Length: 225
Image (cartoon, rainbow, N blue to C red; front, top):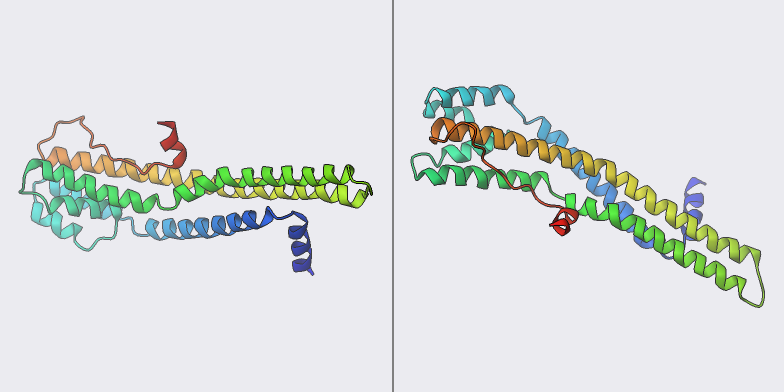
């Protein structure tokens, strides 16, 4: 019964409902995947082990630091482990190794953000397209020789259904998009802070200097530059 109502509602929205349906399915899949990924990553964070690692580095105990970092799934500790493996080489290799490893972690964390950003913009445009086609259908029926009230109201209903669905998808994707973007920004801050501390303690850097990491840009950010 409910499925029949939904199907009837969908068909009344016109042909634009098919790309809107694809957008909705992509939005659900991406939000679900990112929610599960961040839930899994939150369980990997180990602030206690990170404190032990930084304490070992502060005491210049590199073997202990490498032992603490070994086998950890914490993304921040993984970055530090990659940097510690480059100690003893040129000074630039330490910072380069930290930036490279952090870039990999940020890329993983920012996965599918471009898709969500695109959906937030695309879904209302598809709804607007459905509005235009629905109103065109209604006005064409008004100008026909045999005026049918049902045909006119059907075109208006098509416009309203497509608009509502497009806006609904955009709203559904916008909130998780902002939340996941904030999570990536927080991870970037954590990585920069730890990388700067390590660079100061073992790399001979100066206090106050910050290792800057590049966060993956969304389409809207790329076009703004």
